[in-house]
Amino acid sequence: MTAPPDHEVVVTGIGIVTSLGIGTRSHLEILAGPALAKVNIDETGFAPYTVHPMPEIDWSAQIPRRGDQRQMENWQRLGVYAAGLALDDAGMKGDEALCGSMDMIVAAGGGERDVMVDSLIVDEAAQRNDREILLNEKLTTELRPTLFLAQLSNLLAGNISIVHKVTGSSRTFMGEEGAGISTFETALNRIKAGQSSHMLVGGAYAAERGDMLLLFEAVQALGISGWKPVWKRSKAETDGILCGSMGVFVVLESLEHARKRQARFYARLDAVEGARCKRQGDRLERQLSAMAETFRTKMTASDGPVSGKGSTVIFSGAGGMPDLTMREHAVLQTMFPQTAIRGYATLFGHGMETQFPLGIALAALSIAEGKPVIPFDLSDEKPMTAAPSQALVSVVGHARGEGMALLSAFTS
Image (cartoon, rainbow, N blue to C red; front, side, top):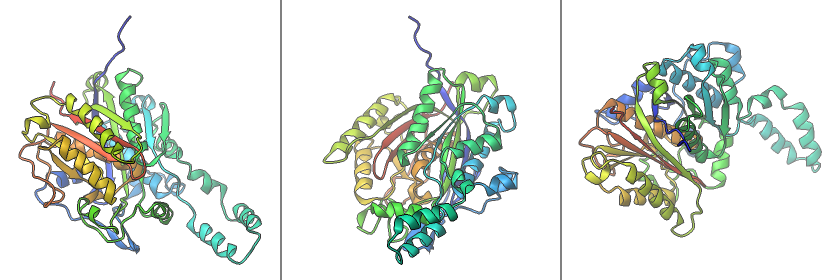
């Protein structure tokens, strides 16, 4: 019986938009220093909640048609824009053959609500007892069908197909942080198995949305004590997640496909693993420790954290919720005691579905740049003495879902 193929998977394109900038160059400058970037936050627009807002964006740079821009909300514009950046970066933009055969996996949340209509319904419901009739009246008179259709989560993938002509298979995952983990786990396995040769993978999240802030406040996930580094944010009852607007897409290819078109490699994606454990007692710690041990065995003796040479960096997507942040940090410190940990929500906020894709992008950029990653929190993160040749990404969802990924420098 013939063994199934096991293709190596490489990162060949990165499209990234966060509150601190647009594109790979601005984010490389943040990671490599020499000085810690100043965070971009909005403390007044959604007080008492603090958000990391979108930067100023010329949408027409990646979404040229005004009609396409108008029918999207900001979370879709962010995703379509970042996807275009990734295709440009990979040298695939406008190539009909490559884009036409490219598969796509998207992590997406719910579409944006019409907050004015929601408010109208709530206000009028306070004056009437026939609320079922009122609701039907407003749904038939206030909501535009075209607006509702534009909110569907899988239309992020649809709009990428329309604007950038990426017309291979497409799949959309929903489910907050776990969706972002599943996109990369699925993409990696499909390429390794020979089911796809090149894929566009990522997601987008718009933090400046009152409806989403309401949802996360309902489970007491948000912080109301202002900005502070993520490791310090976990020490008070008023601390928690500070949401961040971001769009991140990555082009993944089999090594054979990338070599054939003479593509540039950022890094190799070695492994991705996701899980969804219960969190009572020490179950989360046991799950994360088992996952970390699996990844530790994949690291080479010369490049791994066990050697203590400082050539591995951990990008933690910890959001800042007091209990979960400390539990994740404790496991990472125990399993990788010599390794520098970088909590990237300190700089960029928490992007829910996009938090794991952001970690993948930052890891690939840091490996390709060949410079030590500066501490994002000078008091709680140790400096690196050497450039990373490997990077571990860790994300623990605010309610469920946890995952890790390992990337390494491509050396052959």
